[in-house]
Length: 291
Length: 267
Image 1 (tube, rainbow over the protein chains, first blue to last red):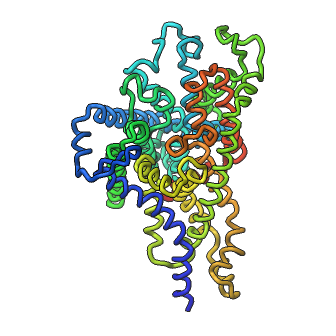
Image 2 (cartoon, rainbow over the protein chains, first blue to last red):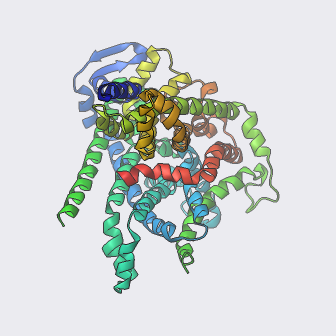
């Protein structure tokens, strides 16, 4: 009797949120695709359709390929390091008895900070005259942020420092979902701690690991803040990621067509990456079901 | 024995996570003239005075509070009814809405920056604080929607049924019965949405150009370049910018962790 009215109420209550998502998220991505087919320069009032010319320009643009490489390298290295560092931390957080909540609060701190602050903080630590590195190791390479080979790694360091806690907390949630009895039974049967970890904990943790990799790699691929603060993409354009190249093209060069093309490529990369991880998640679930 | 050996693993992590932050705070208290010395002879609050007296940072703090507060209100105002509807009312497309929201939360913000810029310019909201609140509320909506949907699902279904049997409309049942009980989940969502808005840089630097309307991340990102301030003053400014989020991390850590991992566990 109430089914019809509840359905109507449901649609009504969900409508504003749906509209907001459509208007400010989905619509704009479609509009980005449309803009990327145009030559649009706001200050000159220029706006005309040019087909795929922006993409052809990008295909021959060394700065674009460099930005794509920087983004992929940043994502791969940062996320791999975060997972490797987060796993022991998650295990320690899972076991730590007393002081556990203080430990979790401390771990949470870097993740909650604005990335801008995290980046400024590491810029301060790496400062060549009076940074911690210069004080502790006077022989270390002086100007890390001015070195094309090292500067992107400083941004990776910021990302690892800031988001390893997030990965650890996702893994911790995964650990807490594993029934204690399994490990207890294995221990009674005489399995070593290492064996329990390899044969029980790690396989059962796999969905949480894939999920952490999914969240983190999609997030890392849109890197902007850390590089903007540390180097602004310099020296030259050597450390520039896609988001920063797009930002500069849109805002500083005022070229909305080309900037939209770079933005859309970023979006498509993230989409492909996300679908690949989802496949990995589904395939693994499927395999487990078969066992 | 439980707990003891694990600290050997945790201690290096604590050092890695906390010492850099401690160094930032120490630098912010370091007299500028003594920066070349290994350690300061005394600590001073002068850097904080210098950071706040310029007006730029104080203004940015106010702007960020306004934008963060308004974003939180708007985002939760949109998310709470929708989350209740997804959790308790059978309507077509609710699964799609939830899945779509998750996908949208993964969008790189730059992918929407250019049309949003054109749109905000057309409706004369470019370079205004409301012009930031609208995209912020939309981009934090997926997070709030997921957290609140699981909050409403965890409330016993009988509560809603009972309210309906007593003659309440779905809206009244939501407003009077379920929403008050969902307060902890609403609080957690509010914290996370606020932190998102407080930390955001890309939109803030893209859509706002007038210095007096800058938010904290923008003011900080442009700090040294613009005023050529000493590092000690920058450190003080950065420390001030962390106050709200550090307070949230310390006071509400249990809730924040629960909220942050809720999606992950259920995913």
